[in-house]
Image (tube, rainbow, N blue to C red):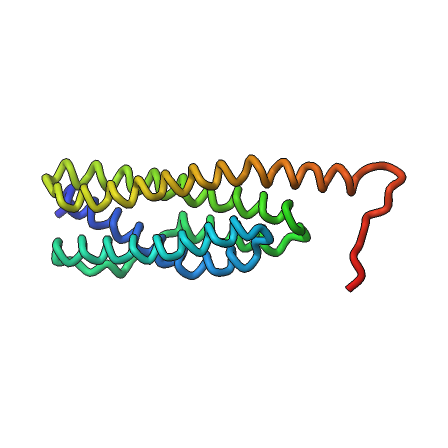
Length: 178
């Protein structure tokens, strides 16, 4: 017998649960790699928010009588791997921060799409309380994306300025004595 719409919904929730738990592990590394205090603080705040997202999903699974485990979100796994690659690059200061913001926004956009889908599924199934919880998380993901966009405007300008100074012909890169 083929699976039904409810199973598709549960499958989507399991994917989100895996994604959020991967982020709980990745965000502290991103915070540590950030040089901007504001960006670091943003990652730390989003870590706390992400833990809340996991709790909301656990509440939904409890209401459904389902186990949240059993699925690995490969999309988030790839995005987290890309973020780890960025942190392994030889970028410094604002340049690293700009790269981290790019990686973080890819994650946010993935989550926005996934939560939008899960919310639509919950509404279709008449799960209004679950839809409300998913909408709350969706709105937080959208707010995080907006904060990252605002930070990017300032940090990208700094990164461009730093890069221009370092690339200017006839000028030596200034290295601080260690």
